[in-house]
Image (cartoon, rainbow, N blue to C red; front, top):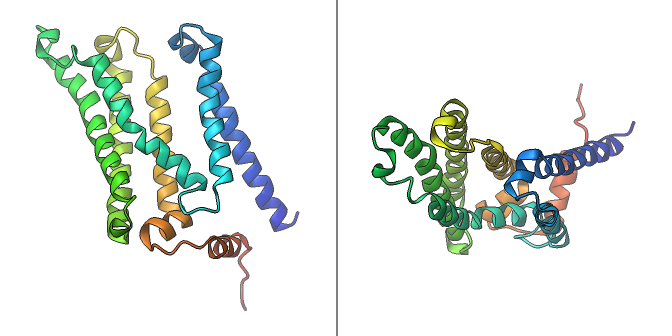
Length: 226
């Protein structure tokens, strides 16, 4: 099999795997229950990522296009999840809600507060990097490290949910936490490995033809010299 054909097959398989994963997650019993068994809600849940995938593909020649736009929209929408999470859990944040259960109250704070703080910081950094004067390798490095901190905090929260979920929540389903870890993890991998991210946010040197040329060179098989 030629190398180009192998690359195409590999990427197609990865894309197919992502689509299958999304479909499997949003059609799982947990997701179905969280939407009150409303089939139209599930279709909206599935349609959002697929719609944005199409938008990102059509804008791939722009600096803030392609997968960068996809992940950036996800990061910027994180502030909405903070407000939604606080609105749903404001009572539980009060110590009076945990009378005679101060240990579980502290666990709940560890579960929810670090994630919210990191999400807020990521949102602020994402806004900052929208300004050309703030795009440089130093700020990009800080942003990448903050993404890793986000992955770590999310993993800690998931462990707390698995071990103490029955004591902290009426419905300790891990589906939302797993989805969030998957998103933050994929975002971190993308921001560390993407040539587009480096060119747009680190070097301010975006040129689509140059970007394609670099990707094509990376995709070529390595030749060993004698």
